[in-house]
Image (cartoon, rainbow, N blue to C red; front, side):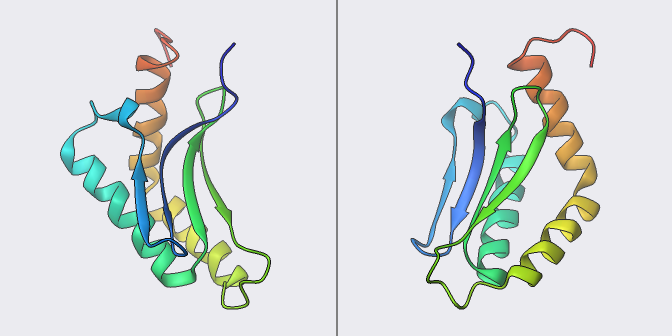
Length: 110
């Protein structure tokens, strides 16, 4: 059965690491670099963990979590930063959704 969510990439301020799912290696290098910058800058700015995840229907979501005892995590800043990313990177995020729907869900028309 199809997984509910498929992680595209993510970054953790706690572990100081960036993860990129190798299933998406066919994406252009410039896109991968832009995603890395986006994720790492987010976690450096507000903390916590950021993941870009595809839902079963192909929609892309920015998922944020933080450790319960992380008193430095900026919840308000997180919400504002996610809205900023969604606004400023709208074209990139929509293109990634289309890519996923065509190449992973094999939808002919999106």
